[in-house]
Length: 258
Ligand SMILES: Nc1ncnc2c1ncn2[C@@H]1O[C@H](COP(=O)(O)OP(=O)(O)OP(=O)(O)O)[C@@H](O)[C@H]1O
Image (cartoon, rainbow, N blue to C red; front, side, top):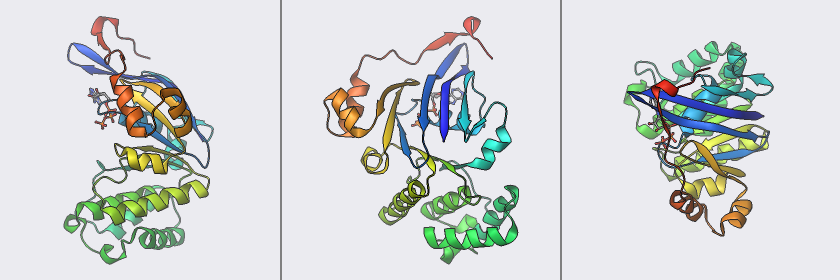
């Protein structure tokens, strides 16, 4: 389970600071897929990075499986998998070497790691290029390896930042099926995506971020009811049209850091 409590992040950016995430709170239960959606610059990636402990919040906290990120960052990393297209692969290593390396980093016993590599290879159909140098792989093939890498320690919580970016229809279907499997296995999943059609199919509940704030939250039916829109795309466009304050810039003199 993921609990996000009043998370806030201010970035220093020249003479004005940027309020990227503004006191957001939400929770994701086991077996639930939560769509964290919003336009470019809304604060999605910043939120994921704070939950994982890669970025210190200016204020607020996040809790994963009962551990606070502020006090137990290592426990959080053991329990969370991050899928991100910006994650690079070690070009000179093969996918098998990369997966073994990360299994080792997470302390997965060797035999269990080999089984897990087998299972993930079948699942993501990466067996044909498991022993090729990563530098020779296509974008979609690399994305599949990234996905397998983030799951090597079988974490109970998954954070997915644009998981289908760069994938063809077949690759996207593999991810869809996998997210369904994660739900069935009782994992808590956050998915950030610009593909609203995909989000509509994939997610049980949504948080719509705009200028660092969650403006709407709920199931599709609840969002439809409170906006009088039918599709997630229409709801999203209504959100963008709404008179929301622009992302706040804070003069340096008024900055507060915790
Ligand atoms: N290191 C940084 N320094 C300064 N500003 C930053 C930094 N990282 C992010 N920001 C700003 O914070 C805001 C939120 O960025 P973030 O990457 O979280 O958005 P996003 O919703 O993931 O966007 P996208 O959909 O384009 O990936 C943006 O205004 C961005 O410019």
